[in-house]
Length: 530
Image (cartoon, rainbow, N blue to C red; front, top):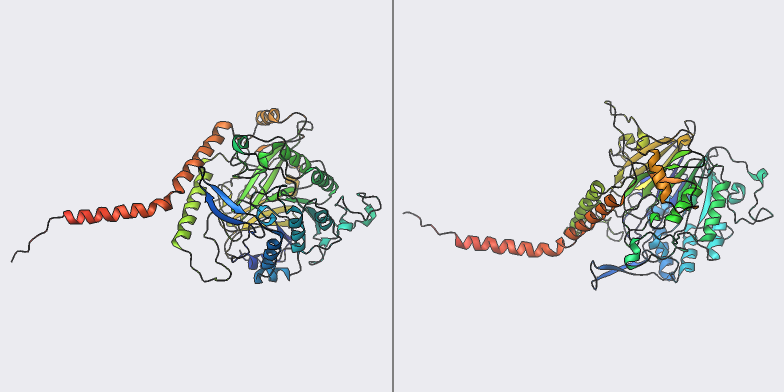
């Protein structure tokens, strides 16, 4: 995928093991983005221990990170040569953390080093102490913020200062806190606002036992202070595109227990509040970006406002797995880049790849986008649904290592959404392209949806009364209880079939060899005729 143009792009990435080779950094650098935004797990600070076999299935165990270890590993990442080369380019590095760079797997507000973790992260980003995001971390509120980019300005000067942008409600530079001064704003209509949310510092702990399999209506990810900040900040935005980044998937709801598969859908009131904030009047072209799951997916919900009758589509790009993913062997260690993967590495990769492909086939994941058919010339007939630029057709997911990219065509008012892999000469892994007017709800819903008015009505009845302005449903149909549980049962059966296989393989091989030897002994000997 060679492209020598200087384009209006922002890159995104997550799930980066600091001790492993990341082959994506040179590709990101070559595409000359205006900014690189971390979507979580910039480092892996917690340690995976031996599983706990006191229950079945065995539980994974992790040793959480200390503040000194967090800072040490952030410095390790900053010293990676290819990452240092990217930092030397004239671009903004921004982002938020998820669990592994927060300090502990699936961590929440009970993590004892939540304050130290936030400070280590803003120092890793290199934020100045006067910035609102730094000051919030210093006050213990979490790691969240917003950056505005004006693509009408020369490259290297596109980041708009916090004061000029006027989006951050916590700024003290306006006389009265939170009041914007219109005369200070001189940016163009070619602007992109990137909001990063912290889903760890104030997160409610996942429930345990049977309660974990029920939606938690009181569960929250952001905390009230961050909610009020975000709702006010995005309401102020006059940007042509508004990107909302966090570590966890918003549209997906793959498994009911958040201790196993984290997602916004486990806390439905929080998810609904996020939809209402993003889809409020005046928020132009919203796009969600998430990480966490070690694969890339393009997802979509179609949303309906019962009060106004307005409808609009909301796209989410998950980009996850820069050094390791479900469909690949993990990258080589930086200290030994010539090391060859072991047979166990290859088996685990093969088993994981097959399992996740099967899950995408049998599970009713109707949030996933599906590309439309192609013309006889091979050109995309509807890249809005994915499959553009020679990328993957059908269900819009890939298990390869990847980073994400948004590209903005201001003359055509189009947004290209890409997931890009390790081969710079190949097409993108996934690609969709749609108009800013479509994302803003002025051109109706995107093609490929199957929802009817009754689908929205049923979904509206299921929402807690008085908590929703918008009703958002998977664009290919809501997942009913039976189909959802069928997917979970199939997932469990696959796991039970795949996980024990490496343990049984030596025994099966030994039995095969013994059987062969016994057969050889029972074959009657023949005498040679002289």
